[in-house]
Length: 266
Ligand code: IPE
Ligand code: IPE
Ligand code: MG
Image (cartoon, rainbow, N blue to C red; front, side, top):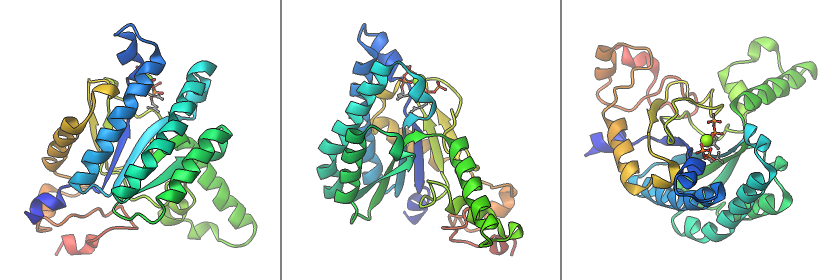
C-alpha cells in the first residue's frame, strides 16, 4: 500500500494544448474549445486532489500567446476571470490553494483581480496547490532570476561564488514549487513550448494525442498508472535506485529531497 502512495507524483504539470483544434474539428469557434477546456481543468483538479497529488501546475497562457489574435486573447482572459470567480468556492471546499506562476502583472485588471481574489480566498488551504501559469515563459523566468541575482551582487549582498541552484531557484516565480515529477502535454505535439524548463529537469514526460477538452478523470488515472511504472534514476544505475528500498527520492530537489544522495550508495 505504502509503495503505491510513494509512486504518486508530488508535482504534476500539464500543457493543456489542443482547444483550438478540438473546436475547429467540430465547426466551432476556437474560443468554444477554450470554454470546453475549462471543464477538463475542473475534472483534472478533482482527480488529482482525490489521488493525493500535492502540486498541480497548469499552463494556461504563455508569454508567446500574447501574439495571438486580440479577440482570442480577450476571450481567454475573460474565461480565466470567470474560472477564478466561479471555482474558488469548490477549491476552498477541497482544501486547494490557488497560486500563479509567470507574470500576473501583465494581465488585464479584471482577470488579475479575479485571480488575486481567488488566491486570497483559498490562501488558508493546505491539501493541494493549484498553480496557473499565466503570461509564463520558462526562459523569461530564468532570465528574471539571473537579473535579480545580478542586482544583489552589484549591491554587495551576494558573492558570485555564492550563486547556486537554490539561490537561482529562489528568484524564480516557481520558487514555492518542488521539481516537476510528471509533465503531461495533450494535443499531439511532443514539445515543451517554454514550460517549466528548469523545473522539469528530471520530469517524466507524457505526450498524449488527445485534445485538451477530451482530457479528464480517466486520463488522469492513466497518467498516474504510466508514472507508477517508470523507474526514475536521476543519473544513477538501476541497482542503486533499487537499493534505496523503494523510498521516494529526488537528489536534485533541494527543497524537498527526503533521502540524501549519500545514503543511496550505502
Ligand atoms: C491551448 O490550446 C490553450 C492555449 C494555448 C491558451 P490551443 O489554443 O493552443 O489549441 P490548438 O493547439 O490551436 O489546437
Ligand atoms: C502551449 O501551447 C501554451 C499553453 C498550453 C498555454 P501552444 O499552442 O501555445 O504551443 P505551440 O505554439 O504549439 O508550441
Ligand atoms: Mg496549441
